[in-house]
Image: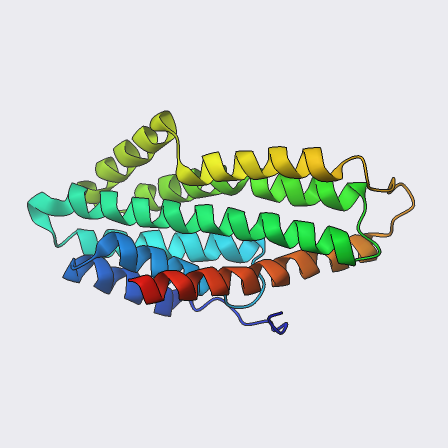
Length: 216
């Protein structure tokens, strides 16, 4: 399993890598996917850090797209697709991490399952809301394109939304009847479980990222 560490998110590094990937435009979808996966797999994969990573990637991609002229929509569409794919892989990793933790962590409870499932369910809205937030401060050329792309993604269904929904359904069915009630659980114990899930998920995601990178 991946060793625990508390690396801060390298906002500027992620933003610059994403800007370069879109600006150069050789394989935007794969590059943005790989940048996102690498960033998410470093340290704990908790909601706060995921939000920071998504924001940095989309912001960097938007800056890079501003120089694309007539190809700005195509570039941002590829970037959004790459981000969506990376977040779907993150949902897969989280599902596996929750299953692993439930089987080996003695304090895992009904409360912990509900919290973990809630985190999974928020991935799509985290993605959508962050794109909207970046769009608000983006240049005029990029702003409208981002809003249109994320609206279309929502209407047609995102990969992360589909994957996280399937993961929540599977985990609920598999685990809810095997867990003890958590009325007496301490906040400290639940926090420890959550940190363990985030760390295991990051390790699993690192393996997924390495596999995809080698295929690329």
